[in-house]
Amino acid sequence: MAEFLVDTNVLSRIFTGDKNVKQFIETVDAAVCTVVYAECLQGSKSNREKQIVESYLSRFESCHLTSRISTRAIDLIRTYSNTHGLLLADALIAATCLDGDLTLVTYNVNDFRSFRISSISSRQRELSQEAQSLTSTLFHCPLWMNSPVARCAPCRPE
Image 1 (cartoon, one colour):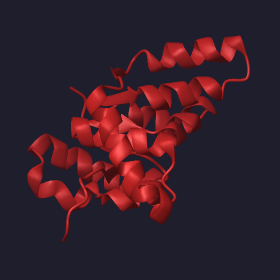
Image 2 (image 1 turned 180 degrees about the vertical axis):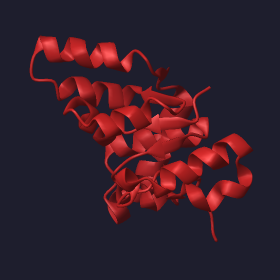
Image 3 (image 1 turned 120 degrees about the vertical axis):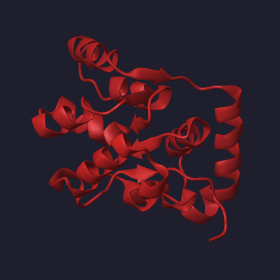
Image 4 (image 1 turned 45 degrees about the vertical axis):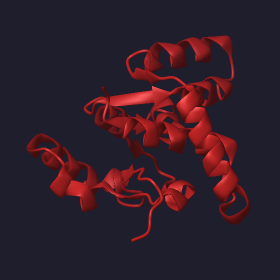
């Protein structure tokens, strides 16, 4: 089972030729959810681009929508759409992370703040030795300084 879910904005950098991001993503145990997959296809400008996108995405584990993810996304929208401007795609991505206990790799941490996204570095104590080493690399990598790897966590009081 994957530990990370890759957001569309990260894959977009790969598809526009960012070799550093590609190299990084290919070193982690990552998955792509149905929403991200569809967004990547939708952003393709030709059938040839769609083939390239699908070929690349096939290397990742797929996280498909389930009734539990759908129900959780609806709950998130019910709670956060008016107060935090939560959009459908982000609700489905967040629900997928929450359901699979996945760490979200994104450049848009603010899109997920209402779900108590925190830097993965704050959860190092809970991770295995191998993951701690990876976390240190992720958090200090210059690629991620502006938007650190984030972890979806259920909404709960501090």
